[in-house]
Length: 118
Figure 1 (cartoon, rainbow, N blue to C red):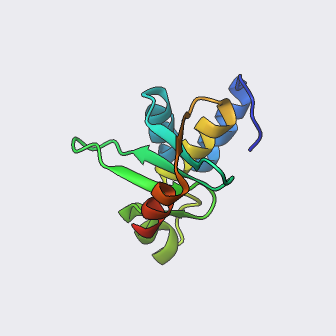
Figure 2: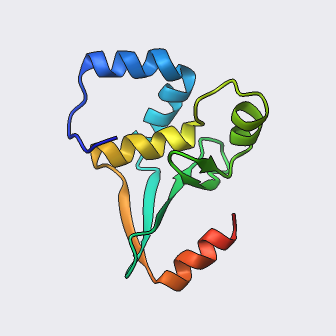
């Protein structure tokens, strides 16, 4: 997705048609500021940290297009193939494309430690 500051009603309708309930949940996460893009200082590597919707407010590490550490990613996407992406991946893509994610710079070592948790 490319960066856009506004989203038209038609675009919202299409996204809702494609992603259904995950789109609604992802927009709530984005609206609540629940997406952080964590990047290394000297590299262009980054990963998203997305807050879940449960009461525990767990944080999930994910690559927007390829992977999320949440249960739904493994159950609905990898095992069953019923969804295109989980709500955390979708929230990461929406926040990145609308410029609403919080950018956090960390040392390359800190980023490596985060990635090792996957």
